[in-house]
Length: 270
Image (cartoon, rainbow, N blue to C red; front, side, top):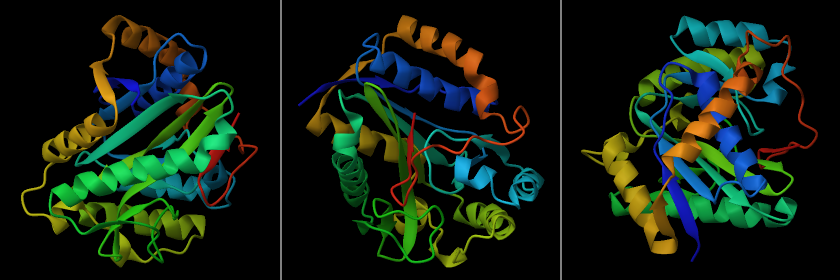
């Protein structure tokens, strides 16, 4: 059992800053200035693009499609393909110290996926770990319902001394998620089966972001000791994030940099 600082800090209305905050926590954990930290929060309506997406010929049109549907485009930390974040979802960002982060990639994916699977099963969802054919941002560590619809996606970013495991659980508004993902994926030239886009509330009556967050926190607590995140340290991370905000804003860069290591497991390394 490890001790994790648990944070619910969000940055409403500034999705690029929100992503930069997760990166700041990662850097602070990597340098030993912050303890292992798990951040769980409600995001805005965001379409999160990766470095691979940003070099696709249809990237600018995909960004325009996201905006046309009311979703703010931003550049994510992890690799993989475009992912959708909604007000009716839960985002997570787990910063984990690691002397050699490349050696624990599968273990980190497995633990996070098992935590989400167990939490959702406790709410009555037939949750399973694994990719659904035709899903958006495909990956073997996705969590699905009934082997039919994707509920959670996860990716990693590694830096010297730490790893970030981050992603999103779609709790509600699956129809809105499908509506924006279809044109975005079409512009990027990616295959997508719209019927695979799901939400927890479609699988468990009465599911809300608050209930799912409570279930996730309870499952984390069974595996690790949770302590409240130091607010002064969080404020420091937020101040550092403001200096990096533009790096995640699609309007502030001509093209997103292609991370040096990407793959089906949605990795980015720097």
